[in-house]
Length: 276
Image 1 (cartoon, rainbow, N blue to C red):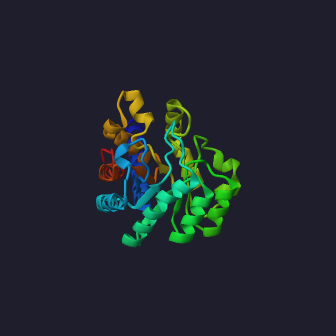
Image 2 (cartoon, rainbow, N blue to C red; image 1 turned 60 degrees about the horizontal axis):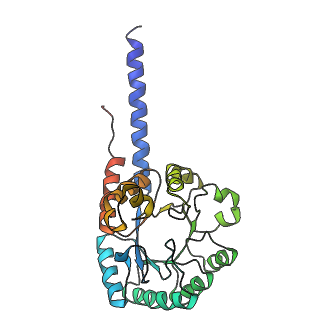
Image 3 (cartoon, one colour; image 1 turned 45 degrees about the vertical axis):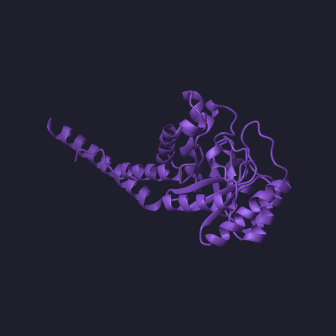
């Protein structure tokens, strides 16, 4: 009898270890983490290397990031970095319209995303250039929700740190093709950003894709005494954490390195720590 219980306990531990591995395997098989490449047709984005000055530069960037593994090209024409003065609506349209036209002409099958908080910009883009993701960092408004409903397109809803917002606003959470973005960088403080990251798994309960965009943001470089140009490695560390805790889309400036991070995470998900 004395020898039975240790053996039985060991069997239970091995069983639960195998079950945890099996769950990881199912998660890996069912979820493909997508990469959203950041392209800014603005002169004042916080990370200078993401600025695309003209159509030639834009197309060269698109060719590179697609070869490196990007699944989605996210185009923004109005900087939302802290302290910036937003471009007026016509100036924003004058930037994004030629970019979207060029990308549609050269890469008609590629998924595009438009980074805008203005409903009329979204409406004009969808009317002229067809279906694309609308990436709205503002948290949305009724006019934007109506555009999304009318065109039946994917919508990135930025929660700005309120992880319970989908429960509070069921009329928005019921939208087709809704993507949840915690809103890192728009929460108000570095402490708030990290509190939100620790709670990331809570969003899984809504059964929606989860987008994480922390690439080279101040929540990474400021605590470490770095700059946006020098925080590639810690950015990848935080993206790895996000993927392990539920992120299904990573919005990034560095597609090649993010692709490598995703491949590493896949290896971790399929590696058991069992001693079987």
